[in-house]
Image (cartoon, rainbow, N blue to C red; front, side):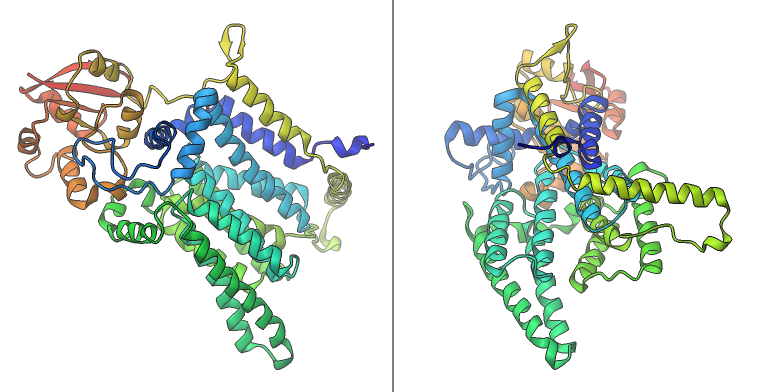
Length: 513
C-alpha cells in the first residue's frame, strides 16, 4: 500500500505542468508557426496511405519523381498517426509533452546532483525560455530527447553507474530510433567519439596504475561506437542515408541562407537573453566551485556552445548540455558568505532558505510516482481526441496561425482551380500549402531536396534580384502567393501586369491581368 507522500507533486512535476499550460493555453498556435510541419505531415500521410516510404518527390511540379530520401520518416509517421487520432490538437499535446518531459528530466537530474530547488527552477525555466525559439511541431523536437538520453547513458557508463552490456544495449536502441527520426543522429555518433577520445587522452596522460580503468572505458566506448554505427545502417536506405546527408551538408550556401542556421542575435530577445543568463551562471560556477566536471562532459559543453554561437537551431541542444553541468557546479551551494560580514536579516533569510531547501529535498526524494505530469498529459490528450469544449468554446485551439499563414487565399486558389504548375509560392509556406490543398508546388523549404540552382532561382525572384520579372514570364507563372510584408508583394502591387485577386491577414494572391 502506497503512502500519501509518494503521490505528492515535486517541483519538477509543477514545472511540467507550467510548460504544458504555457504552450497549449497561452501560446497555442506557436508550435505551428512553421510551414514545414505541413510537409512532414504529408509525408507521414503518404506512408499511411501507401504502406511504404516515398522514394521520389510527390509534392512539387518542378522536380517530378526526383529521388527524395525522407530521413525523418519515423517522426513524420508518428506525427501523422497522432493527427489522424486527434487532429492538430493532439499533435500539439504530444509535442508539448515531449518538451515538458525534457525539462522535467533536466530538473530531476540537477536536483539529484545536489543543486538546491531555487537555482534548479531558475536554470530550468531559463533554459526553457532559451530553447523556446525552436519549439515547433517538427522532428527536431525528438532529437532533443535522444541527445539527452544518449548523453546520460554515456556519462553513466563513464562513472561506472551501468554495466557494459546495459550500456551497449541502451545506446544501440537509442541510436536505432534516433537514426530513423532525425539526421542529427550524426551528432550522436560524434558524442560517442568525444567520450572515446577523452578516455584515450586520459589513458596517455594517466599514471601506469590508473591506466587499467581507462583501457576498460575506452574499450566500452569503442564497442559502443561500432554497435551504434551498425544501428545507423538499419534504416530504409542503408548507407545511402549517409551519402544523402553529406551531399546536403555540402550545400553550404543554401544553409547560409536558411534563417535557423544563422548565428543568434544578442540584442535583447528573450531566447538569446536567456542564453546569456545561462552563460553567466556557467562562468560564475566555474570560478567559484571546486566541483569537477568530467573531461568528456566539458568537451561536449565546448562543442555545443560553439554550435549554439554559430546557429540558432543549436540553442536547445546547448541548453540540454549546460543545465546538467550547472547542476553539478552549484550542487551543495549554500550562499556561504562570511557570516561576520553579514547583517542579521540576511542570516535569518539565508538560514530559513537552507532549512526550506533541505525540507523540500527530503520531500522530493519521496515524490516517486510523478502522477501529476502523467495525469496532465492524459487529460489534455482526452480533451484533444474528443474536442471537449467549455461553454461552447473548445478548450484546445492549437492550429496554424492565420496571422502568419495563408487562409482565404488558399480557399480562392482551390475554388477557382488555379493551375498548380503556374503558381509561385513562399517557400516556408510550401509544406503547409500542400498539406492543406495537395497542390503541387514550385518550391517548399526542403533545402536538402531542391538543390542550389533551383533554390537560387527562387531567391532571385522573391528578392527582386537580376531578371526576376523575366524569370516569372519564362517559367510561365500566372499566380503568386506571398506574404504581405515581402519585397516581391510590394513590387507586384505596383506592377501593371498583376492584380490582387484575394488577400487575408498573412498573404496576397496575385494573378496576371
